[in-house]
Length: 458
Image (cartoon, rainbow, N blue to C red; front, side, top):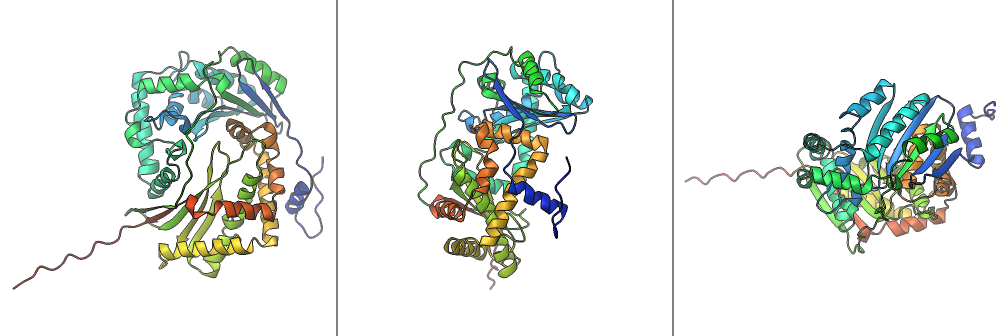
């Protein structure tokens, strides 16, 4: 089928964008079914290349860890590469690599995921490998001790050695004082040091089961063939009758702004960071999350044209960087964030005051209609273009289903973005920009020590 005909005065790419946004999003070729043991399977067809993606998403993350065992979800994700009765420690990735494929894993607060990208005719092999470690993981004291040291070193490099990461960690702990979203995904060091073989085995046995997982297969695949492979490899794994809905402590109402200042000699660029509690995407109700997504882009998604950069970097010249961010793909409350890096000679207090001035003006005047139209188009276009990446599409489904969204929620997200109105944005902004629900952090360098007083002499 020929591509879209370029319109007069437009490039072919722009015309394609116009056409894509003018038409309703086509239904993706997605098939879903559930095995008798409770494993949900999603198949996303994309026959443009002879490549297949396998992702297994477990409905467990750091927010599901037992008290005093922070980091255990990330620790077990590492230990999943330590072998089974038939696969030697660290051999899993070597087998995938020998087939010309790649693999990895990641953990968030709400999910843990493992994935492989291989030639489509190697899918049978990696499905067998993944099913094997779903129920046959071999945990030995030696591997546990070695991997515990690995995650401690990872924390040292990614968090302890990074003042910005330390500030974010402290701010999140202040934002969520009762909800486990306040726990760092990697864990608190003093608790990570105590993680044991028994801890790892108990966590694995409690959460790693087919009825607590979602299998996403994407690429050059046939749903009928995938069902047969899933039945062969995953079907014999017994479900866990003790898997139950996630019951988490919830956050009480926040009554006052919380503030943190972190001074560290390693800081090269001081900045102001503020996060507000914000609604998440909920099954069947995504409109407010869609409005917040557009709001974040409108305020700070583009370093040249968004509201905060325009006002602070180009008009008042009080900042060298300003941005806004939001990700509502969470089970419970998410956060909406603002960041300002002041220009040389501008204090953090001035930078924060300027940020507040711009937000107050936005709440008073609302968005520029042309800017809103442009941003809304760009946000939806990004969602549509992301479908060109088969891995991104697989992740989109796995992540959404892991937090309880339905297939319809996931497939209608771009429509929710397109339906966002100015009234939706202003209602969401008014709700979110409440300083009683905020944590404000300053990352700065230590003040120089005052000169020592001279000793008195006679």
